[in-house]
Structures are given as structure tokens and as C-alpha cells.
Image 1: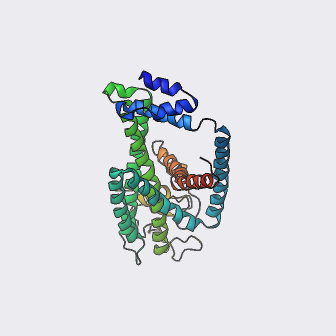
Image 2 (image 1 turned 45 degrees about the vertical axis):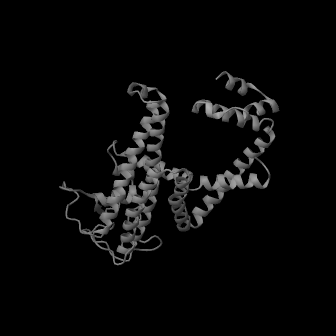
Image 3 (image 1 turned 135 degrees about the horizontal axis):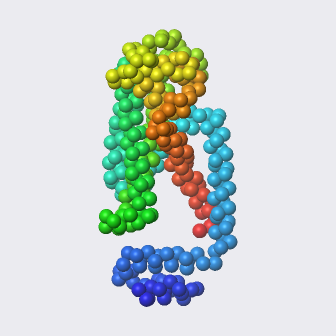
Length: 327
């Protein structure tokens, strides 16, 4: 260990030669990491001006990319959402194969298979009556699982930071890896399912005919029919349902409570499926224990940018640095 310390404090060309001569096979993993860290510092010593230039390129690229993405989203939202969804679905797959994360790959394949089947059902014409319920049940299930997984992962990270993992004789690095992994699983699949659910909700609602993104509905909505799923409503608004209740929006249109909650939370819609009047989510989720679901959905929308576009922007920055000869 003394030899390692001497190498780390060495400077200049002599320090770099000493680092290169260290036998890594005789060192523990922690000591190997320290030597690698010292080698990196020795390699980049005296490159402060170059590093400042690289930081400026990164900041400028982030600002320009953000402006372009905002304009794209405002002018062509459909193509923006499709490209974003495709990137969120594919980009993690590349890192999974590269880093040999086989557990993530297995879960990704299972999720993709079931979601592909559900999406196929949602885009068929004519739409089978049971399909809307199937779609919302699947995506609501994934939403709740991702929410719970993210909470457990966050708590595991916090417990590790406060040292509570030692009460269970768990190493800090193991506890942190466990927490971060659960947090990643929860946030990633939460973001992915919301985008797929939004796409399926648009297809189904337009197929049923009570909803159109750009025009008037093609069917008249009866008071006894839910505009989300197209099925009859048997429970009055004032009655308590056995399986689910009936919900009336401020525009006086009524829906199955399960359908309108899926439409607003999972499908990311905040307007009435029929008349497009804005939905008051605070009124719909008056129970304080349900409001975190809304905030969690807003967090997932913000993370879409990080998951889908951040790797692309970082790759672009690396390409610019390579062209300019910066390391």
C-alpha cells in the first residue's frame, strides 16, 4: 500500500512512469481503482485549457439541442414522440448487450413481448370491446410496479447514505448497487409504459370514434356510454359500485372511473376524451395518498429527455471533440 501512495503523490513524467510500472495483479480492487485514478490525473495534467474548451462545447451543445428539441416537439409532436419512444426502447438495449446486463435484457424482452401484443390489439380495426380494458390494465399494472420499485430503490439509496445498511451487515457498495438498480428499473419502465400507453390511448379513442386529436368526434356520446372504452355505464354517479364507480367530469360527461384514471394518469391526457375540456386532476385525486401518482407521472415525463436524448447529445459532443482533436 505504501508503494501505491508513493506513486499517487508522484508528479510529472517520473510519476507517470512509476504508475505504469505498478503491478496491478498484486493489488486489491480498491487499490487498483486508486492507481487507475492516479493514472488518469497524470495523463490529463496540464490540459486545463483543453478541458475548459470541452466544457464550453458541452454547454453550447446542450443549449442548442434543447432549443431544437423544443421546436421539434411544438411543430411536429407526433414524429417527436415516435422517435423519442423508439430511442427509449432501443438505446438501453445497446448498453445492456455491451455491458452484459443479462437480467435487464431478460426483463426487457418480456416487457417488449407483452407490450407488443397489447399494442397490436390496441391498433386493430374494428376494436374488440375488451381491448381498452386490457390495455389500461396492463399499463396501469406496469405503472404501479415501476412506482413501487422506484420507491424501494430510493429508500435503499437513502438507507445506504445514512449507514443503515450496516445494521443488516450489508456492504455499502452492494446496498448502493441494489438501490440504484431498482431506481433505474422503476424509472425506465415507468417512462416507457407511459409513452406506449399514450400511443395506444390515441389509437383506441380515435377508433371508437368519441375522440379526435384534430377534429370533432365522429360519434355522439350517450350518457350511458364511456367515451374511453365505448362500453355501457351501469352504475350511476351517485351510486357506490361493487367493482368500480362512475366518475363525472366538470363538463358533465361520465366515464368508468378506471377508464378516466387510466386516460389521465397512464395515457397522459388531461382533457375530456369527448369535448377536450381540461380535467382538474386535483379534484379527481382528492385523496392525498393518490396525489403522489400524479407527481410521479410528471417526474417520468421529465426523465424522458434524459433517457432518450441525453446519450445522443453526449455522443454528439464526443464527436465534436474528436473532430477538433480534443481528449
